[in-house]
Length: 136
Image 1 (cartoon, rainbow, N blue to C red):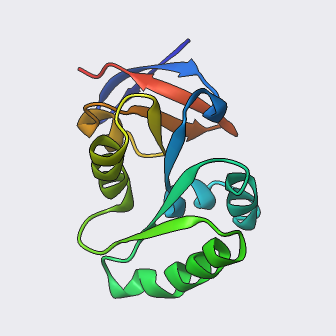
Image 2: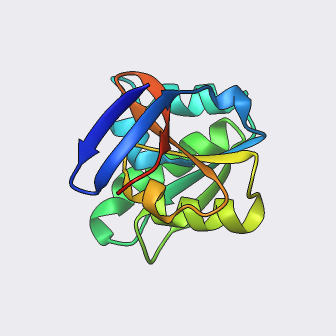
């Protein structure tokens, strides 16, 4: 376990695996930005039950959103646009409403951990997934 203090609070990060969850809701912009090859994210998600959430709430997002939508089509992934709020918030909303316990949001943004009620939040950091627990 690692303790991480951020502007959003103090979080315990516990190593975790995407295979521990029946469905993942993935903040595509956030996670793909941390990878050398963003296509790697979509290829790896093709083997999991995942919903890819893509930022589309500002016109500056659209060129990358189109590219990610094409990757979703190529790998037959369930893809949802977040047109009115950041993707990590939309992912939490979808996860809590559609799946709940046994599912997780994957992001690099700690805001998701503050908002999730029923879903786990996996923070992608240093090439690994960490379950964020607690914040105060």
